[in-house]
Length: 206
Image 1 (cartoon, rainbow, N blue to C red):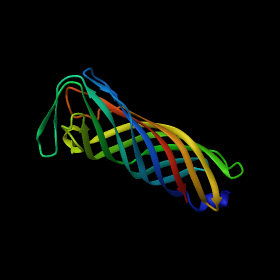
Image 2 (spheres, rainbow, N blue to C red; image 1 turned 90 degrees about the vertical axis):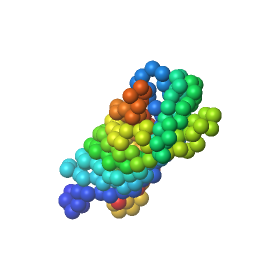
Image 3 (cartoon, rainbow, N blue to C red; image 1 turned 180 degrees about the vertical axis):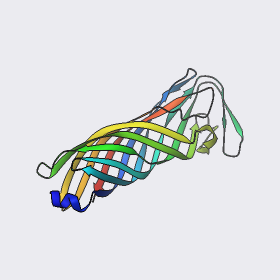
């Protein structure tokens, strides 16, 4: 095993993960009003600095969102700079797309039979590349609301999973991760909300 490890400290992988995502509101006047399904898909890069420890990064497209209930009358700006006035009691369903570059530390066990177990913790810096919203009352229907969403997002991630050796250096990868957002994703000065999500990792390492 030491000879194999010395030949390469880099492992590459791909993943496509189902996500359950929701808002965590930070101000009065707006409340979480349900979760949504999303996905996270892309590439994984692991750089092992020891046999059982690695720095992890990658590049993925992440679809997040959730529903927000606005208790007061609210104005949202759409992509063509029109202002849409939403009456009090309106729920807005947000669908947000991000470019994600995670930075994490991975702790991995030795192989036990065909299995290895790991834990992972770090951060998920994100850049917003799209935002659409649909509101009750048909005032918004998948409208572009990028001006209502901050460009950058950041969350703390932790979780773990298993790898199953299917031959040579190829492993199936399954895991469960929780991302706790601590940066306001809304550009509005009246309302503040972070976004959290639970990720079900489905991938393959080479």
